[in-house]
Length: 116
Length: 112
Image (spheres, rainbow over the protein chains, first blue to last red):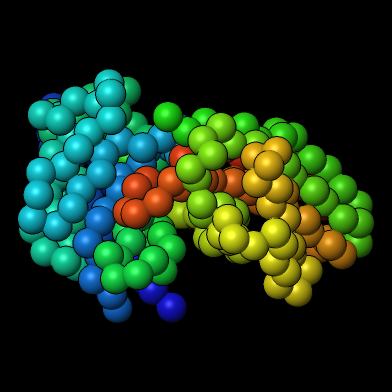
């Protein structure tokens, strides 16, 4: 089945630094990628939607200059948390879907970000 | 926009019993309803899904029912096992490559 590989699985960084999270679709072309954030014991909150080759569409309240999303190819999307602060500590999850027919959504395994 | 309500938020059952989780959605244009299982520290895993042209779908111990008129759908797990313990999320999607809207999740505990 469809697989999305997400790295790193966890990362600890210092306040003020930037962190990049990668999601790769291994066996299909991900025309659309979604990035979610999940706080402990809460549901997944959509941060942004990105289509390959286009600028990402951010949800209300999500700072686009802080959470940089790049989806330059059909198999790779990245989320960069810039100038990270402790309140950015969360579980970040990507999800991908193909544009050819509808085959559902495939989720990455998530990245636990801790900012100290 | 779409709003998905999920109940209950926690559910404890004895091993071997059945578990039912219910969700309602607000947008009648939604046409795809997946259910995900999430274990601690992991991403969501699809366990079953249903499209709006189907009323029921079953996969071994797991089944989903959809009532389009009432705009609600339910997950049924029979003969529960301890390894079914996890957080379950329902979701809905309107169409095209639009994002899923998730319910708030149900923490299922299966007691051996």
